[in-house]
Image (cartoon, rainbow, N blue to C red; front, top):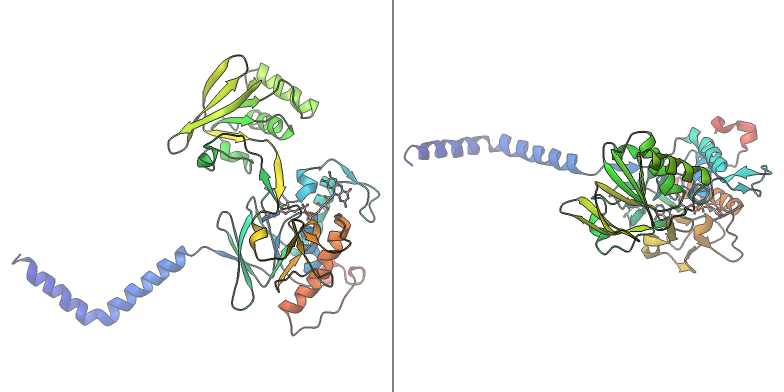
Length: 376
Ligand SMILES: Cc1cc2nc3c(=O)[nH]c(=O)nc-3n(C[C@H](O)[C@H](O)[C@H](O)COP(=O)(O)OP(=O)(O)OC[C@H]3O[C@@H](n4cnc5c(N)ncnc54)[C@H](O)[C@@H]3O)c2cc1C
C-alpha cells in the first residue's frame, strides 16, 4: 500500500498536468473507433428497389440524365419474374423484338444499363425506409446494408419472392445457421455436407452442380415423390450420379425434423417404407420455390390498393414526395401489368426525379439517335 500510494499520486499529477493533451487524444481515439464501426453507406442518386426488367431499364433512362442508380433485390440475380419464373419462355410484345426469350431480354437490359455502372445489392430484401430531414431517404436491407439517395423508385413487381418453407416447427431457429432457401454462392458449400429437398429444376440442378464440381463433400437430395417436376435431362443426370454414388437420392421421403445446438447438425428424413433416417449434415436447403408478397413495403406509409402502390399517372409518384412506384408494383386506372408499360413508367418517373435532384437545372429531352448513349 505504502509503495503504491506515491505511484498513484504520481499518475494523478501526470494526468492533471497533461489533461489538456491526454483527454483530447483519448476522445479523438474514441471518435475514430466509433467512425470505424459505422456501417458503410451506399450513396447514389436513385435507389431502385427491384432489379426486374423495369428496374433495369430505368437505370438506362436515368443514365441518360446523368443520374446514378443502385438496385436492391431480394433475389440473388437480376431479372425479376423474367429470370425467376420464365427465363426460357419467348416474349412477343417487346417493341422491335418479334420474339425474345425472357432470359435474353434480361441479358440485353443488363448490357444496355452497363455503361451507366449501376450498383447492385442482391439477395437482400429492402425492409426499412427512413426519410431524412433534407427529404432524402435511407433504405436498409434485411442484412443491414444501408443505402442513401434523394430518390427511391420502387420497381418491386409482385413483391418479395418469399421461400416456401417446409412445415418443420423449429426451422426458423436454424435460418442462416445451416438452413438456407436459396443458393447465392455455391462456394459457400465447399467441403460441406448438404441435404437439398425438392423435386423441381432448382433442386435437381443445384444437387447435380454441387456434386459435379466437387464443391460439396456430400450431397443428398430428398424428394416427396418418386417422380420429378424438372426437365428430363436434369432428372437423368441426377439419377446417373445417384447410381455412381455421387448423390444420395432419397425419394418418397420428407425431412420432418432438424436438430443441432449452435448450428444445424442433423436432419431426420421420414421415408414412406423405411421409416426415420437420421442424416448428419452441415446444411439443409429446401428448394420448394418462391411465392411473391408485397412484404415490408406495405408498411412504409404508402397508399396501397389491391396489394399494389397507388400512383399519380403524371409521373408515377406515390403519396410520399421522392418515392415513385413503377412496373407491376403500382396501380392506377387502366393499369396493364406488362413490361412495355413498366418501361414507359420508369422513363417518365426519372424525368420527374431529375427535377427533385436538380431543381436548379432545366432538363431538355435529347434523342440517343443524335447524341449516342455516351454523348449524354
Ligand atoms: C409466366 C409469365 C409470362 C409473362 N409473359 C409476359 C409477356 O409475354 N409480356 C409482358 O409484357 N409481360 C409478361 N409477363 C409479366 C411480366 O413478367 C411483368 O410485367 C414484369 O416482370 C414486371 O416487371 P417488374 O420489373 O415491374 O417486376 P418483377 O419482374 O416482378 O421484378 C420485381 C423485383 O423486385 C424484387 N423485390 C420486390 N420487393 C422487394 C424488396 N422489398 N426488396 C428487394 N427486392 C424486392 C423482386 O425480388 C423482383 O426481382 C409475364 C409474367 C409471367 C409470370
